[in-house]
Length: 124
Image (cartoon, rainbow, N blue to C red):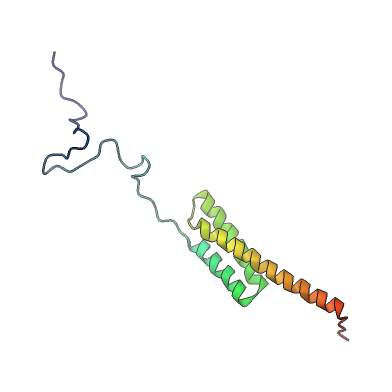
């Protein structure tokens, strides 16, 4: 009893190259099955902007820039976690640096109030 032609084509034994002139294809691999699928480049603009604003807030020592950096960092981080954008690490760094900036501003304000109370400053 003879079988009809193999519907899947003749498979090459493992490790052997196809005959000259035929393109080499690995069986069983294709797009949409994991590692072979091309990745879309993800937007990282918001994460970069948040990091720049947070670093600038440390350089200029303004609380408003720190708050803006923290807010932008949280938005970029949540987008990155949902897979809508890239730069999750940069967004997390922006959040941390922004909170450090807020802590520095609050610490300086508290120090100013303590110095004012202890020296009994009068603004009369």
